[in-house]
Length: 248
Image 1 (cartoon, rainbow, N blue to C red):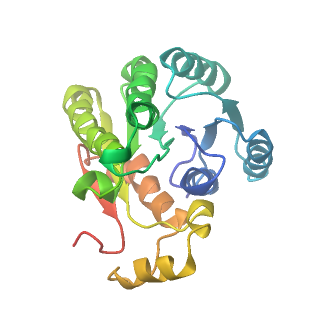
Image 2 (cartoon, rainbow, N blue to C red; image 1 turned 180 degrees about the vertical axis):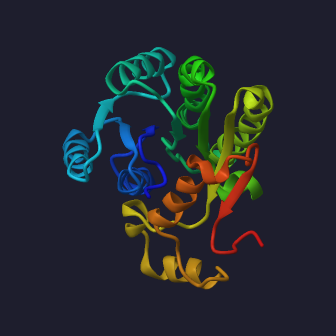
C-alpha cells in the first residue's frame, strides 16, 4: 500500500535539490504531483516525464510563489487539472547571505518575499479548496537556521523563523476543519548547491553533526511523506528538525 495513493500535492521550487527529492519520493508513494519552478525549464521537463513514468499524474508550472496573483492562478490551474489539492509543500527558497553591516535593503526584502511571503501566498491560495474538502496537510520548509539563527544570514533566519510562527497560527486557525500545518527544519542537506562548497568546509560541517554525515533530499522527503500521509493524522502545529542531531 502506497502511503499517498490518490492524493494530489503541490510542491513549490521542485526542479532541483530538496524539492526535487520530495517530488520523486511522493510520486513513488502514489501521489499526483503539481510542482513549480522559476527558471529551469529543461530540468522541469525532465522531472515531469520522470514522475509521469512512475505511473502518477505530474505537471510542472512556471510560477513565482512570491507573487500573490501567480499563487492564486497556480492553485486554480492545479484544481482544474487534478481535481483536488490534498497536500501543499512550501519549499521554494533562496539565500542572499551577508553580514548585517554589508546587507543591502533589497537583499533583505527579496529573501523575505521569496521565502516567507510565498508561504502566505500559497497557503491563502489553497485554503478555500482544503476548507471545502475538510481536509489537507500543509508542510512548510524552514531550516535549523530559523530555529537557532546564524551569523551572516539575518535575512534568511528571519524568513525561516517567520515560517514557524505562521505555520503554528495556521494550525490553530484551520485545525477544526481537519487541515494540518507543520514545519520541517532541515539541517545540512547535500544538494547541487552544497556541492559547490569547498570540500574542507563540507568535511567540517559533517564532523560537527552527531550522525557524522550531511542529510540527503530523501531524508527530508521521507519526513514529508509522514506529515502528508494519514499516519500523522493527529500531528499539527509542530516543527520537526531533520538535522542529524545538530540542534540536540
